[in-house]
Image (cartoon, protein in one colour):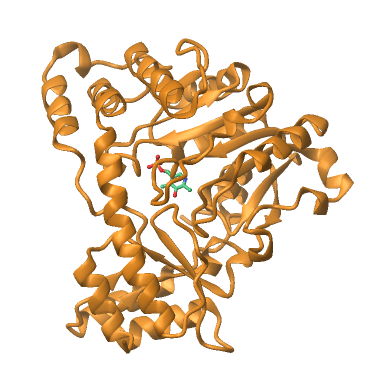
Length: 386
Ligand SMILES: *Cc1c(COP(=O)(O)O)cnc(C)c1O
């Protein structure tokens, strides 16, 4: 029997990394020691105290059962307290906080709650691929908002045609940004809010890197903008904040009616987050702020080493102090980002991510992830010719 994928699966953008994955296996088979700047997954460990809570709580019978759909009240209270402490945003833990099985899960499911076939979803490009994939799964039409370096990788809303705006129901944003590492400020979020209200568009801000920054200035929450809670929600994750990518825990906060829609989708598809993990996460939010500072000191050191080395090698690097990514121009004229990534892997055994993997407007750039240690970064620079 021949199995045909659904139209929605066939509509997904092509997976650009397949060729690189194959080449990686070949290079490895040659005995080359691969250095990977490819993966956006922290190498640093989850704080021991968080793991200890998970161990303890997983042995308790009540936590071994189905969790509640919207999340443990204890976890949602910790989220609300953390938002108050960190961003000066007050949230009702009962109605304005929803637990997620990682923020990717919530981002992917949100369009199912609000998008009808043919509705437009505004998505940044380059961007996290889930914004467009979730849109396509819901029958929506992604509309690309280009993020250009001369506008500090912020979208220009005035470029969006009126007929697109009329059909637009939802907009995804992500700052600090993966892959560009750009940040947004309160002024931009205020403008976003105004624009979204005028055009009846829901704003979903992906704040996965809120705690990953190395300068003095912290990151503004989208919910700090005037009236943000009237039209938007913010996605958050413990993955990057506490090195907990494998645990699968995140949350969404903000407008209670939008969260109600997302919650209704989830109630029909999943059964919530393992309670022991929610309690471990709550402990992190309540107590583990030092981890964030310590991680950021490590990322800063790595960034300094990599950026200085790349510049010496002739790369033009976008300057930022947020996320654990370095976004740089392809240093070889006439090569696409994918061609460059392939040749670098072939010649040196180093893996980087071609910008075109994040969308058409990522072409011309490559992304380095700072999730390997200083020695490995130095060794990579040597292999690259430093
Ligand atoms: C890592 C990442 C996420 C999601 O992480 P989860 O582990 O699913 O919480 C979301 N958005 C961006 C931009 C990311 O890079």
